[in-house]
Image (cartoon, rainbow, N blue to C red):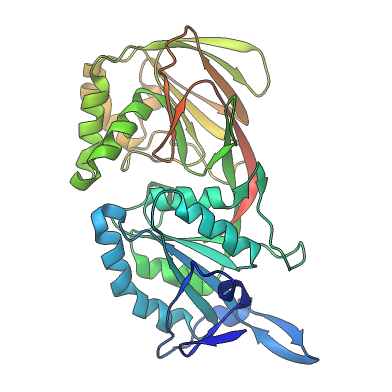
Length: 362
């Protein structure tokens, strides 16, 4: 352990120069003592403080995430600083949160907290994996694992909606203080080349993925970006025949697919309950397929997508799957794929579930 600006900083934090340490101020009693462990150092018993790494995208939600975090940080210090080593790390660009998370896990952090929206959470989740395997710590025994925490800031979190959490960072800090955990599933996406990609919310294909791709260009408009993205995606959109293979079974043809959504959780696109029966602890996906939809179907039935009542609509089907392979029939090479709102490229792809692979602070 070392002392930095009056803060006791864990070895995990001291080794990583990319992590910015937050000063500890006026600590208050917390609920963490129940989750602390007693360890031996130099023959004497001492109480082990938890190392918490807060990964913050200061540019998230058009910069409001960074502003909200600055206001929140004093409360984080006072609520958690008595029993934890608090390490603040600000991302500097795309994929930086992945690198920060991997380093924190390798150095034995007890939890990595994603501070921001679904984009930040998505990168942190991908940081739990490297070269197709979960990242492991360097020094501690195999029983030690790094948990995932979430503090939703900015426009909110679709994943947090599935868990029934309010968009209130103070509630999130209380969850972190209590330290209760549960195992959740993650989705793995493999292409023909390159490393696998991971997600914990929803992956989707074709129209909805294209809409998400365009929506990302208009984030400055808040949730209105999804409307703008959808309008742009509809331009020259054509439903497409796809071939799918579920749970290593036989190939099936899905005709005139408008969108195909693979849910580990329920919501995407700013509150649309697209896979209403998905559960991130179930060990499988809910796969929802919309076929032969026209633009006016979304106008007339769009409210059902937000309420999660669209499974009774004509040309909408739902099924459970532990894995699903999807490829295009034809050769356009332009069927969009995204996960957790991040554009990943085009088909073909295979989606596999990884049951209980992440420990979530809940």
